[in-house]
Length: 389
Ligand SMILES: Nc1nc2c(ncn2[C@@H]2O[C@H](COP(=O)(O)OP(=O)(O)O)[C@@H](O)[C@H]2O)c(=O)[nH]1
Ligand SMILES: [Mg+2]
Image 1: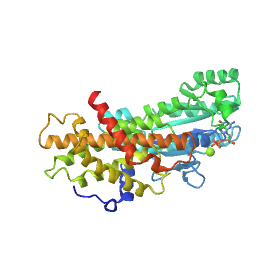
Image 2: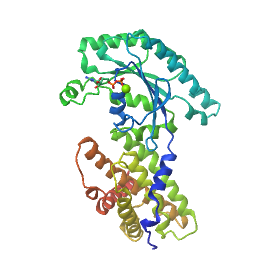
Image 3: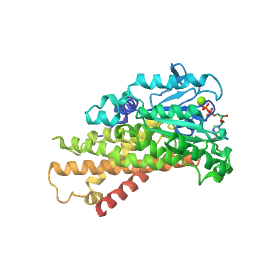
Image 4: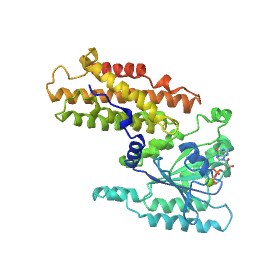
């Protein structure tokens, strides 16, 4: 077997290719000044995306937040102060801006076979109304109706619910139902553990994110999910159901070529790219300063070693379909199964790392997670499960 050297692989170029392949939804964030727009954005996407100084003013009162390696583009409206004359400007501003973006109805466009235009529009609106204000203003109602008339998916994010009691909350919800007639989600960006515990039956962050994903075209969901902070279950689903299969197909394609399959050099670059893609989806690419050397040393060496071992050992017999296939079919079955198993292993390891780092706030030693032993054990587990289940 020919050795594969990590030096042959351009990690930065590959990460750039992965980012370039991800389509980004445009999300419009509306609401009065102080409604909690920035806090919602930080809570859902992390503090990094919309840091002061990262935004570009695109028109009066609207700032775009966009980063090369983040899968969403946010348009944050400056809002208005309740009771000031800026209120009348706000609706006109937002309306002009949305019009300029183009109002291609997603369903009409799809029927007409138009796909490229889908990128060039606002995809959904998160309209923030502060529960702390204890009222829904005429302006909120007006702007929401205007956006709905443009067939944009609009959700009200009812913010700062820690600022009122259950009865007041009930009254706010009734007002939104009656006057706005859009779906709404209760939130609080407070990170006080006592507040969080007290509100746990009320908070609907997960529901908001579920709504946001459901209302995006399939082609835009990866960008959105990869941009989320936390939400590891959604990330895992995306990785296992959408991302890994891209690479197993690529691996099967490579194995069809009449080059001896035992040349792992053909398969390894696909697996490294897949691993980087998985790490990126879990948000680990920003955490790993020495990402390339880690992937280089572990995935490259393990992939080569395990593939050799697989081809000559008991693991090989576990690959579904191998016993019945012949010739190049063996190659494609082995190549795609092996890649799927590797993807599963990396996904599980990333999930565990992300849980430790993002949800438990722990400092971890990466090699405790990304090591040959873990990868081999998880791959063997995948082979067994897919053979029997
Ligand atoms: N108690 C409480 N305060 C919040 C919450 N969300 C935001 N705030 C505070 O409300 C103020 C306005 O929030 P900000 O996100 O800047 O609003 P924006 O002007 O709409 O972007 C800030 O002082 C926040 O700290 C929340 O959920 N609970
Ligand atoms: Mg703000």
